[in-house]
Length: 142
Length: 142
DNA sequence: TGTTGCACTTGCATTTTGCAAGTAGTTAAA
DNA sequence: TTTAACTACTTGCAAAATGCAAGTGCAACA
Image (cartoon, rainbow over all chains, first blue to last red; front, top):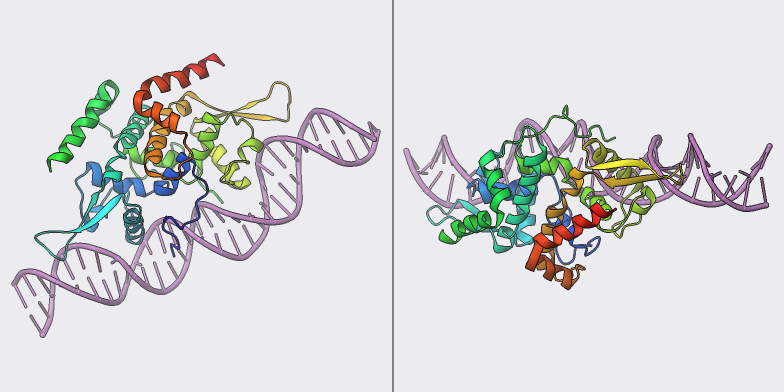
């Protein structure tokens, strides 16, 4: 099962940039994990398992491994509890922020039932760059 | 095969905007079709079959149907040839442009072997908004 | 020393994909 | 008027990925 993770050795279909992105996170689950790490304060395997979309545990394990190999997510130890594993976004992972915001804006526009808060969507439309900087400065602080 | 296309009736995992985007085009092929329609001047089924990534014909048919149902792609008849079908992006599809550009920028930054032209990436970094307007004005012209 | 919590693995049925081949409705040439 | 060619698909089947439920391993705590 899951023969491949994407590495330099994995046969890639092309080096088109859209295709590179798809081969990195173009499936139904990976961006949800990134979302939870980026926006929802989740850090542990157990927390990542509890999203609304109910990812199954084997898929989560596979995707985390893949994201680690791609240097999008880093796996670390919790300082206070040796048995606990902490997942976080690397700089490469954090650089997905503008993509995440564009996805949010598009869905906010076209999904009549979107959960995205109106105020957030307004902020996105009005001053995306500033929103990006605000979120990034929150990361730098911690 | 292919039981679902996403419609109002399809059970959706959540109305998180990231999830909405994933359920619209979160697979390994859909964005490649959109790329070819958006940037590579492709219009027909046959042309869409010839990409570097070699999409197979049943998957292409399925994804086009899906994209039509989602109102991202429109299917039209060629004026001069009744047997020929013309696919094009709807306004909802064209609104994916900023997402496509962000994906390109990210991949351009992290894929050492990216095919994205250096000059295009420069333009993206320096004045993304202007690039978007230039591309959009090209669409309005036709 | 045994129980609990956390991070995964494993097995297996179901679904989706990839590949090759086939069909159907024009249009164009003989 | 028949026939070949072109375009847009559809079909069948093997292989791979997914979803679900249950199990394992290891450290900490009681």
